Length: 414
Image 1 (cartoon, rainbow, N blue to C red):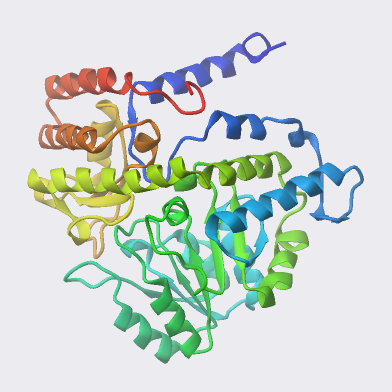
Image 2 (image 1 turned 180 degrees about the horizontal axis):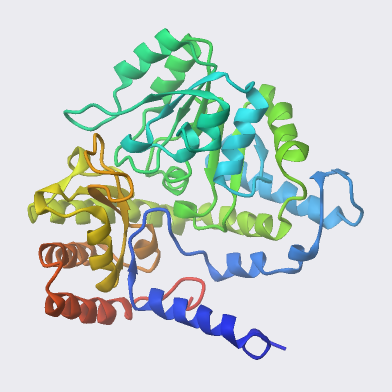
């Protein structure tokens, strides 16, 4: 019995969400579309198998095929990033992957440097409400006030003063390239491990559109969705001397059996990332972001750091006398999905910050190009300048619906 007959309520919700995405434009930088092949792998018979342990060292029987799957996934992960690092493909998501590195390489209470959430970092980079900030002694670094770029000199001073055991690089809302080599130099000069969390930019790295953290960093964590266009999950890469401790932190430390169906999807996504088409996609993601950023600035908007070098940008709403929640709601009504986001040194509260975060991975995967992004920027401009004008919002919604319907949904239409 198929889903529609078995559970019409869930089937209807899936249809509603498909319609919402088909008729709108997803501009949240952490979202993307997986291919039909990835979706098929995730929905495969591997969902029904338990495989606690690692290849050739399982606690359950019947894992000879799973072993081949996991080994192939590891092999492809190394190929994508052109590295010979040890690879663990079992993390269930990005936060558990970061947790495993901390638990494996540190003692509770150890000092760590991480990027301030308000300056573009992630919750797991030491925010006080997160496990990372509660279990470990995180000291935060951030961006300069004048140009809103990472202050590497200040990071070096903090590292020298604080003598951390580990330094975390990477971000969730930083629109500029990250100098992994310099951060590694700072870390190693004070005897610290350098962990790069490249969850947002992994697909750009794989496609040659962002400098790689390999071989500079000791540990690299990444999710496999976002710019990589795989399933929800994560991977840890590390230098050989850290492999045993990190593997034990994943299993049996923090997880039981891996999600083999998701690992099948990861393997498919890695194979896709090795194609010439993926490299074109990665470069188009950046080109699209720069086209939209350029048009927004031409229309008079202020972007944090004055633009972007990757897949995202952060729009400062203060010149418009708007806040993040109202802007997000208005754009949602226009069929433009974004997320409210704090800007560096934000005077507003986190629940209603002064910015919105915009990104191009999803729309790029649908085949949208530079000129299209300029049109999207013009819709954003009209909406944000007329947030209370229902007729303007309605007109934009009709235009975005007609526009979005021209582009397929990867995984469903292709």
